[in-house]
Image (cartoon, rainbow, N blue to C red; front, side):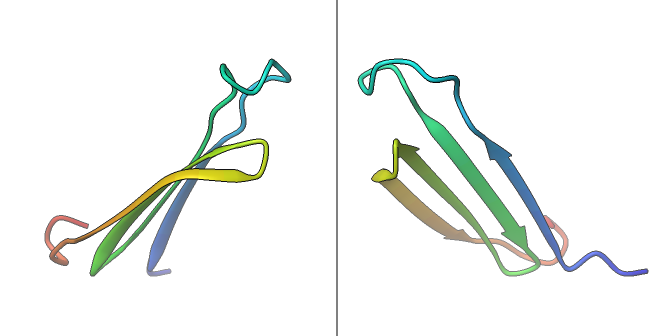
Length: 55
């Protein structure tokens, strides 16, 4: 079996919006993508290029 993608998700507890943050980190052999949400509203996203060795 070959791993081609790793996805980590963290969903925060039900707290007021200013304190609630959910994260999704996806990594493939060519890029890493990080998304931060608060109750469905995307607060930030960043994608960086990586090498297969870093993966």
